[in-house]
Length: 286
Image (cartoon, rainbow, N blue to C red; front, side, top):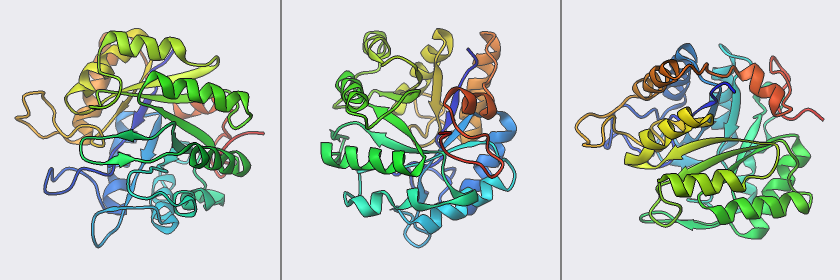
């Protein structure tokens, strides 16, 4: 199968003080996505930031500005909006980006499948919150981007499918290397991939220094990659050179070329995930 590249340009953590290369404003994010499209990506996972503070925001108007800018030059790129519980935990706020419609409608929304601890903060995702967000996406015709940090979260996805909150086909981000979750090694990755429900597509992500390792494993084993400054700001594990998003993407392309894998087009993944074709038709096909 061709290589899914899920581009994560911004995230919630990197600041301009940490790296000048992280895109913060809508204009910066749009321009980084433009460069990424020129290099070759399949989908983009967006976080929005407040213009005044640089901190994460859930505001639909900010997401709408970013989505409009991206679709002005690539109408079929698959766009996922973050619904993270790391900074906020009110349903109405987390679900606000899902209310965008028409040409601003996201194709996908992220759904972290349990609560978890990061180094200094918790991401709170109660069963009630997960189910409400899943229902909201289902009712709005938006596909869930399922985020699993350990095998238990995959088991919970199967439970949600059994109860009717999720329907295949599924797309999973498998995130390894977080201090309190599955570690970035072959055993943990293999268990999580083995446990995925039927009709699932997946990408591997590595947190921090583990990004290149997990991306490499994914490329050579037939999976997809999640890559970008959201997960890692360094080009090397010795942390001597700050990366740009283009640096990280070009490295994936070199590995894909060396292993004979072509990058999957957004149009092809839309077909596989039963998404509408883009060009003013976005979200799930019913």
